[in-house]
Image (cartoon, rainbow, N blue to C red; front, side):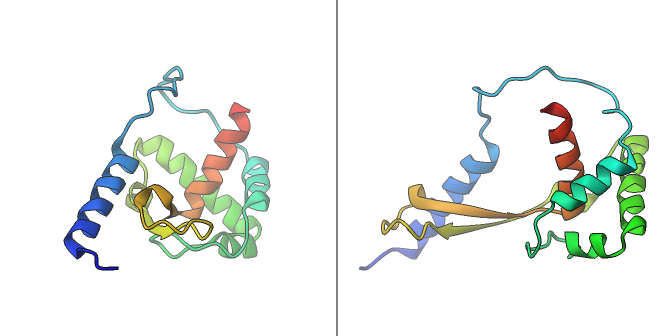
Length: 138
């Protein structure tokens, strides 16, 4: 099969642009402003326990196993990080970026972006806070 490399690159660019920039209008929720409320150290510990092991790190290289291995110190660090974010009103730079790696779906034989999956390498500390908020919402 002969393929044009420029066409492949352009197809990927279009696909990834749509993936990360399109707003899904089917999703709606009320916007809340201000701090999300205090999180407790037991919520952080529970969220850390829910984190799956052997996952790829985000840009910082920090993985959940590292935080879990420190026990109370890592749990406290996540809590302090959260309170720093709330106090300053901005998230760490590492949380604003992620690595997205497109891969072919092994079950499909088509060479089209429609049959692709993406791996997102997000910060594990951010995932802990995300788990806490998801738990509160449910």
